[in-house]
Length: 508
Image (cartoon, rainbow, N blue to C red; front, side):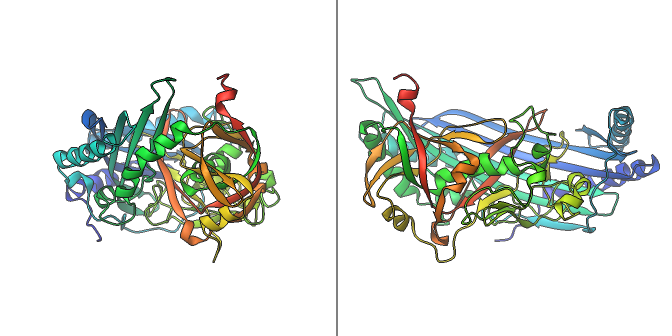
């Protein structure tokens, strides 16, 4: 059901402040200026064994101005929504640009973008979670927690609910004006069991991905995630995991479920194909990238079965929006085609500066700030591995494996500063023998280099196996910013991957 823009947000003096700021910026001779006014409402609830353990409600409201003056960026922000403050913010932004001019070796120019005159965009959701009473939310989480806690072998259960309502108004000196609204939610239950004799413990988490959806996703009313099945299986799955044998290290064929693979995509493809990282501008926080710009069009990223897109338009994606924080209309584009690197994630300055190599002079809409107090940085789109048309089911992929492991759900990860050498664990690992599942294993991690791993991609599942996973809290930049992002993928079959026993690696 389409929603109107929130009336309380629309009542803020956004147009008055924008006109004041942009007219003042023009009078100071800037090449470009943009204005953002945002309101971000957030709420987190945590229950421990069915009892409320923590809650946090937040609301950030403020505005900012970014200017391009003499080829150098300047930025300032404020929370006082007055025209006097709008003028002062512009003055501070221009002054900062002047101070930074001598430190800027390369004059910044931004890629052209069509003017989008007074457009609106609202994400797809049914029920705004902020209209649901807190007592109803806590009651639902408590009832589900008690349901899990009543299962044999479950000693504790933690429930975590997160909700965000984001409103954003943008205007720039070219004439673009956008007003947007989006909602996102996440909920998971994490059960813990302890073996009294050995003292060993294991955990098992539900697999519902965070999503750009409303409260209907949390209750299950939209039919997207089967909460009843997920909650009822937690205890039996956890008991099996606690009693499972440790994996024998070696090389195995893997069938990987989307609930695990999304994170591998995020770390080894998503971050690696951010152009600022590939160019070395992003280095201190999580490193640069092995996928450097000089390899565009030639780097063999993976097997020919590998098709990866960037997409800020994907329905229900956490990174999905209509226009980015530079007024660029969002798009879908290829990042890896037939296993070869063919694209990057771009903002307007990087698109313009590298247009000749990229073969395009248009940004693909990846500039984003996590609050009105932060400058936009180049942030990840929904980067997704595409399924194969009429491709196999997960069961068909498993049937192709003589001796291997089936991986479900994400857990810990580690990757080096060039996004190349990595290691991932998961929620559940099943031994595959002669095309059949043969019980759970524990202490499993898969390890590879990025190109070796994706080069081993033997088959991708069909659209019926495709799931949109993701995270609320991707971190980047200094000062640090967080951003939500989704990654879709089908089930996949990888051949001959190195498997570690994490218990043995830890000296246990």
